[in-house]
Image (cartoon, rainbow, N blue to C red; front, side):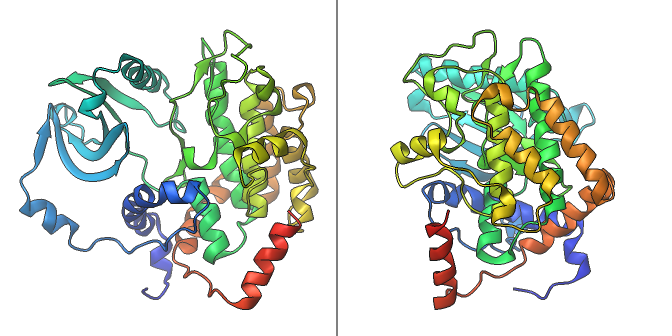
Length: 375
């Protein structure tokens, strides 16, 4: 890996790394969610432009297909250019998601796919990945969404554990402010929307230091508090305790932000267990120490903000995302204000993903084992 320099931590250098990171994310996301160790961030593919010029571009309606970003059981995602936008004088590159043809007759899946796209089209906010267009072209259902390039919060935590060390507390404050801002937009629109899957791999951080909330596949309107008992949607390690009993309102998303905040500060999972049953038991009853128990550099005010979000009784939790955002923004002043925090986030993100994974020494294994034992 090339030597580090100041230029490499600029937004443009980070963007190059982020573009390479998208393919890395698609290949490793399943392993990461299963608890596997992430592979090192690869260098950008130097010959990508030449390869793309050598191969005739495929078309899908108004979209010119570029490189593949991911391919799952339900859909395939490509980076693509929007020629309709180009005709209007806009250069727009999108993430083009297309439902696999063999699912086209499954109307339950098609309905969920289109509902998510429709919701993404209605949400207009700097910290929410927008859906520009969706529908059906040549018997294929599709959604063209904002291309959010960069690592997820989950990948940032894993990279820090493997190579970069602790995330600076100021960086965590800024990340949480932006996440709370996105969630506040969801909760205050009419009808209000509960995301239900606020978790680290559903928040991308771009090269400009902007958090983008993605994946609204299980989001629902907040018109009804009651959910069907026994049918839980989302990621178990980020469930609010009351959701396990069939109760759901916007404060469940705030509990999830609290879990994320704790994990960003401490560098490891808070509730995730060896099985889903163990994870759910942890959500209900695991004793949660403040982040400063494991990270002494965390100030008391930040401890209090995170622990308030993690209150198991919703009535003792932050009552809305705006209150959580206000508390975090007030704390940001102690770090020199928001503009300084964003600049620090951009520079630190570039530096963190240039770090080589630490050697797997006996001492490192012992430290990891002790951390798990006392978690």
